[in-house]
Image (tube, rainbow, N blue to C red; front, top):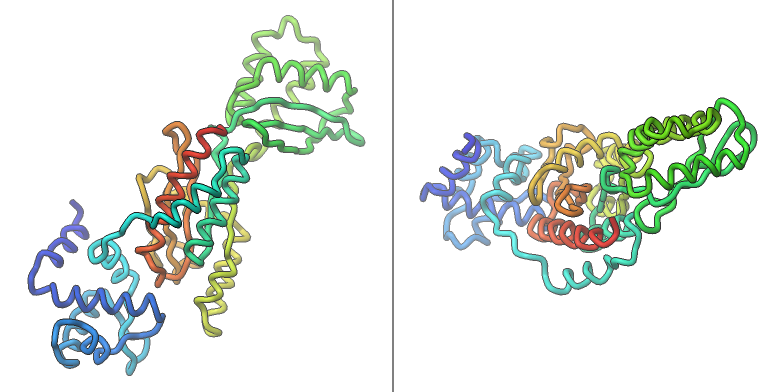
Length: 358
């Protein structure tokens, strides 16, 4: 057990801390609902502890000294810090399973006849819809994306259109530049070779699979075909062919419902991060090998655009292998009791739907 966990356990086990825990829980719940500082008078009135406002102020002073609450203004009430929200999530609430209506909706929308990309887009929209925040889902990793068929079509000059059919029904295109123009017959021969030797191979290992097949059959390959296959092999290794390094986000506009005019610069920074994708992907990748739901609250992410936001994530799987990550991005005052089970259920049901596709 780490020191932070031990400290949290000590607080919840200490009878003297029970009153502080009750007041902190009430404060966080009010803050999540209203987004405004909570006064000592309000806590004294609404708690069942039958204590005075002065006593509440003393408790708040102790909690502030521990870094769990803070005052945004001298005369204002208290709001929870990121540390206080972490303690609230880890120690003061019990997350219940997702309700049957929401669960049925997710099961109905994640239809197994959809392609993996369509399922990912649907999952992102569902997360946004059930949480009223931004839903984000990474596309499946290339390790679990398999080639079905490839076709090469000549374009103008020395360019070729590569048409890939991956998994069951997905079609992906990319344009590659060649050292010289190739005839349509040469392109067909290369496609036939790849389809006969590499169909069923993972996209991530496509280049190595093709090169190994070329080496094994080099005595039967003529110079022109070898040249074309080498171009194809290099193209397969050129950047994120397949689906690595991308995600689908839905409901970004929902985040505007949680900001005031003074916070617009903060939300603009987050929207910029969505556009750049790099920071979001790095954050999601940190959850890829985690078990179950993982939370980043405020500055826990380590990225400036997320300092005022939380991300609740969970990996989704195919055949027991982590295939990607989905999650919800929203303000730190999100309703964690509702978001956590929504993320968990969507990850499990997306895994089940993808099992029929990949």
